Image (tube, rainbow, N blue to C red; front, side, top):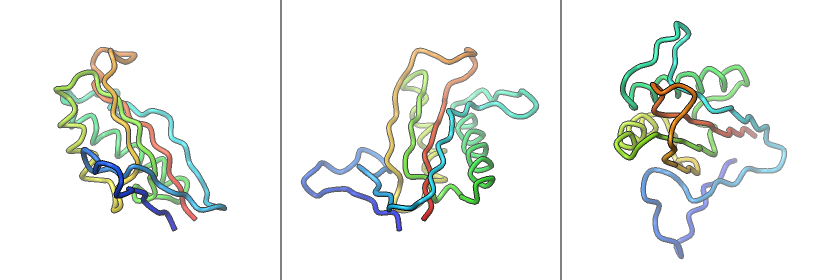
Length: 128
């Protein structure tokens, strides 16, 4: 059983995430490479929210191949190219993360391999 750790001695998380997630011994782990908002047809949506939704669909497909789902995510590392993209990313993320939400980090970076990309997300999933 995965366990969220959010000590009462700490300030509550700024958004929908846990300070930490405990993974029990013997759980299977899947580490997903950073995914970008690009479809199989090479189309890249314009907005950060649309890119993030496409990214989480890709992550869902990867996890399904491992017999897991989005509810098994214990860690999210996300990167956006500007503060103006944070709300769109967070809306897409919040629509798919389970309760308790995973541990998460969101960073603003200068860019990705193609200028059109606004969001990149990598995750770690665990299933006992």
